[in-house]
Image 1 (cartoon, helix red, strand yellow):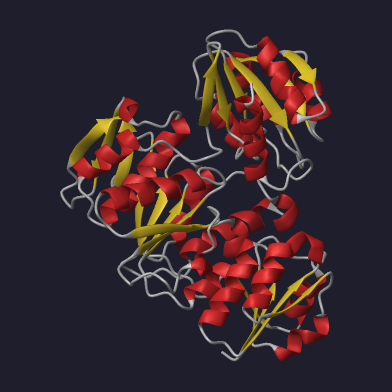
Image 2 (image 1 turned 135 degrees about the horizontal axis):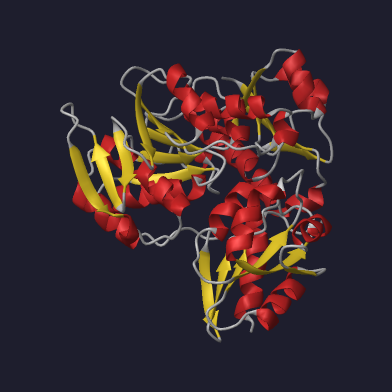
Length: 446
């Protein structure tokens, strides 16, 4: 490999450029269509490492000068440079695929519409607390390119994979692939739900006979992958499976032996993180850990102590008998549904952002049952208000701070103020992390 062109100067693009530099690739060029002012720190790092770059444009005529084009996940597929690269049949890959070129490590890949981050972090926690060497990377916020060439070959890479990242893989092959669930999301990017699902399915396209594919038995879209699997398949769900993990009553049960013997691991109520969705995430994590021969005792201890991840049902503080919960990572209605189902106390729900065709009817039952008041913000606030105002008391606010203050004035001892937007963050914030951080700062300022 003599040259690489990197499209996008975000985390993934910068990490790819630095990986290429460490690997001694003679020519590296990074192109970013957004203005230089948005990438002050990235520019400094590129200059310090003598990596060529441009901001404010894509010099499409350069495509013919490079062996490989690495597209950052945030670059739209209809971007002119991507369209031209495809027309020229250039070797166009994702950052994850680029990083994989330099990896010799065992890999656990985690994808799905919801639950990816929690499951990735939980698997990594189980492995590390059991004494195995592992790191978490990918869509969870740390590009795989950041350290794929810095860890020894025994370290297990637990990689969260978005549909954007999977769209442009070629040889990437996880030893263990997990598909948690598939519901409509990112349709603007993928154009159709079918395309979105097929992008998710690429996680197992290169697997071999001894590799493992872990599927949600209760999710019909995910279960479709079973007939296409290249290796072994394990299932998880709320009903008995022949091979995998499942819930029977309030007990988590395992079936892994050839004799099909059932083992009871623990009570579901012993899992520290709340919600039915986290039972699913835990079941998938258990199977992945068992692949690496982690004992039941160590898995059980990890599940009883894992506190969850930032911005996903994250407890912020209790104030005047009210719990404040940051669920900024709920960027779609499916994710918000799980959050609204996780508490048996009255919920003051703060929601809104960029909706992108959200189907709010999906939330009707859980809102009717669990929500006390709704405070709506962002581009979709009018749509949220119109849909729910005949069902619940609703308020419209202009800023997140106003929304939190409104929720604080309404909430009574025993209530939960739940910030679970059900929408993307880009109308008001850089990303969901920024949105969640602002929420926490507001709550902690009281």
